[in-house]
Length: 280
Length: 186
Image (tube, rainbow over all chains, first blue to last red):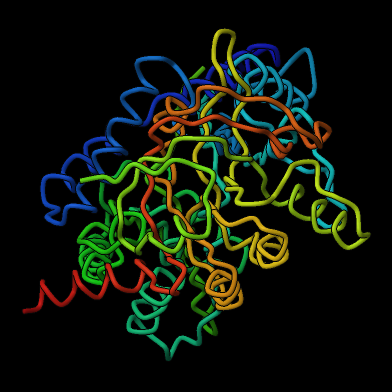
């Protein structure tokens, strides 16, 4: 049994919220640069050049890459041999978000009620995802999620008879419908299997996975490559102005599911796909 | 390559811009997004004047991050314009002519643009740090209670934009993609 102070979790969440918003992960930067090298149209190249210059400014000057500094999605993988002391876990995470969004001059984009609106003023509550895992550490990931892209996401409960083709068509249909809205080039997170809610969670987790990684099952690893290629044949292009680069990455996460179903969720993200992890 | 455009956006200037034009915009623009648009349209519905003169005005759909000490404004890239579609024709009916944002617009908005001589400019979504550099002045005009969504007056210099939909209804999202696919598959 290891004791971890709630205050330590607050500190890490605060730091991760700021750093994730100011510095894109290396794999995302690499993917954007690779796409720029392959792009040929003048407008498309110009857009990708601006995108590269933008994340370089953010890196250098420590300012947010994008003004939509997102809802703070916080993933905690908590070792089962950890005992959290000195405070409430949810409050500790929210306090980290509150401090990070204040200290980092990040935008407060959360409303307290989905229908009646009204800004909470401090970007809380965090969207908190906890998982109990073996061990005595806590792995904390902050993934601020913007809503221009979140709004273009979709979920469908397929009949098993729809098969692989059903999923392929759904991915292309969703990207097509998203068009220029989610600030392409986008990152596409796909969750297949589980239940209605688990499929959506898988799709979000897929966005946290590095773009230079693949699904461990070669069947899905090939599907990731095939669908990225197909998306990039749609011609939507950077910002929707036409071009080769519609997506810089596509990750799939899967789970077993029920004999009667084949849930599939697609979480759309943009070229500002941010996440940063720390282990305590 | 880029054409210099100096605001205000008169009807003659607006009607001279074509979808696909890359422009560098200089002049005064106003910021507004979801909650601000709702409030402006409620104000007009009551027959009251807007907190700024909408004639030949350009509205930037943006909710910036707070300015750090020494900054004019924080990161300030465009938000998805489609959420303002319900309000844009009303604002054009009182003289607002330019819109800066990203993403698709409804046919009703395009119809209003043709009727009143409006232009829809695209800024690079997600390039908030880069776009903030063109913003030289920022002052609060109204709706301060809306925080990031407040109505602000900005002075921009050489703001890099692309004409996405012009006053004849031509649309770069359709034409740019079609041109790319045609060339690729030729």
